[in-house]
Amino acid sequence: MTTSNLEEITRTKINMETSRIAWRELQRFFANGTAIVVSAELDLVEVAYQIYADNRAQVKRWMEDGVVARVSDEQAQAWYEADSMVWAVVVSPFVLVQAEKKLH
Image (cartoon, rainbow, N blue to C red; front, side):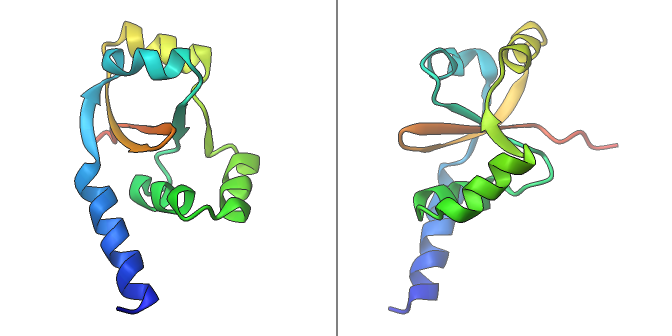
């Protein structure tokens, strides 16, 4: 099996583990600092894959650009008050979350 095949299998596995969930169900991860927000401009599965693959340089760039970060108190409160649904995937020890994209 080639490296690209393994990468594709891993991305597919991550995609299959991604789910829509109420933000309120993720409060314990926010409380312990392991909830990571991924900007809507990024692909949640790709970010999860890069964290899984330990691509520190890419993750650092995203963090510096502000498109990957720990969920802020303000964001957590807004999602909680709105009873928001988010997309989430676990890349231990983190739970990556992304707001649902609004379709117009």
